[in-house]
Amino acid sequence: MPRIYNTIFWLLGGIALYDLARRFSSDKAALISLAFYLVLPFSVEASRSFQPDPLMTSLFIGGFYYLYRWVEEKKWLYALFAALLFGFATLVKIVIAFFIAPLAIAAVLLVFGIKRFWKSPLVWGMALLIISPAFIYYILNTGQNSSEFFVNRTLDMFQLLLTTKFYLHWMTFVGSLFGLPILYLSFLGVLLMPSRGRILLLSVWLGYFLYGMAFPFQTYTHSYYHIQLIPLVALGLAPIAQLIAEQASIQGRFWRGAIFAAVLVGIAYPAWVSRSVLVSEDFHHEPAFWAGVADAIPPDESAIALTQDYGYRLMVFGWQKVALWPQATEMMRVRGNSIDAKNKFESLTEGKDYFLVTAFGQLKEQPALQEILDNYPVAAQGDGYILYNLR
Image (cartoon, rainbow, N blue to C red; front, side, top):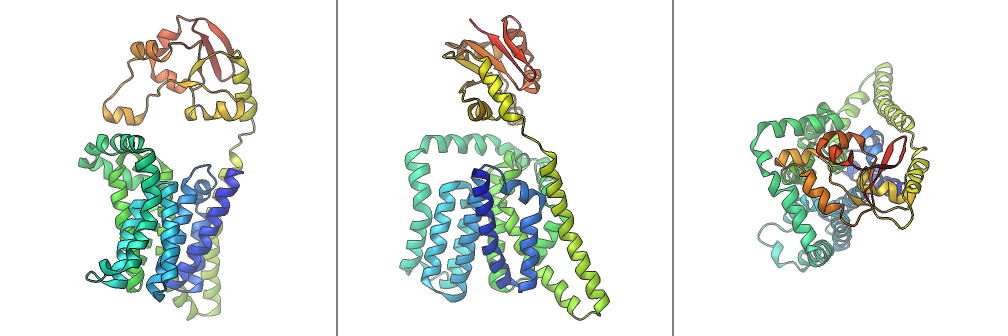
């Protein structure tokens, strides 16, 4: 069900994106933007995942749509709708603020100018609606966790920004998700837009750049950190599609048909790739496997685990909550840290009865932990897991 909800949110975002792209170009060009948004393999995969990011992105698209309507028509109701959607988006995930802030600032300056904006009650009301939800939740309620996240994800990774390798990895990674030619075409399309659309979209591109600088490690390792780029790239393609449509309209019937066929192939191929990827992934065995792993742990006994996905699979399919042994991650290597297995084992296994291993690749990365576990008897073992008795 959660994946269905995310898909619905994504489709609703597509409706707003289509009308926004139509206002930047034309109906036909907007259809190309919508097709890209819906059939890009990365988009299909990301929009079906059980994460907050698709909802966050859909709310951002809706907010962008109403913000542009406000810039066009100066109706205060559109401004409030935009602020409400942006506020909910930041509540879902605060990182979208990197995109919302420059976009909202650009829109306000387009409407009021730099000398008059601060006198408008509407501007301050919009700011309150956008900022309040995230401020209440992330600062007042979870301030310590939020500050730790900032330190771990930003300050500790600052040294990456000083290397050329980081920017190369960034471009290579995002190119693997979208295709670098598509990104270049989209950015060129932004430059070809009418003035208001160009300013607003360039402000979002600026936000994306600042966002990537703020989370340098995730920028080239986590695909879902780029989900916000999907609607941005889709909107940038609209002016390019408009130019093609205008040229196609003056061609003969045969060449118009050839252009139409080429467009269909360009849409059908990524749609087929998306479908093939989904069909090739089979998770039907997961519930039975994790239920079997949970059954291997005696009732009312405490366990620690080196396992996948923070132990969520074991919780969802096996109704078994375990403490987590740290994984040897790329982030840890970038920081120059390592796991002191001996000291960690003494502290983390205190009061625990069993040590479960399902992430054998991680166990191979931590030979010191393997040496420690070899001193304990195996309580249970099966295809894909091993349970050590710590008592």
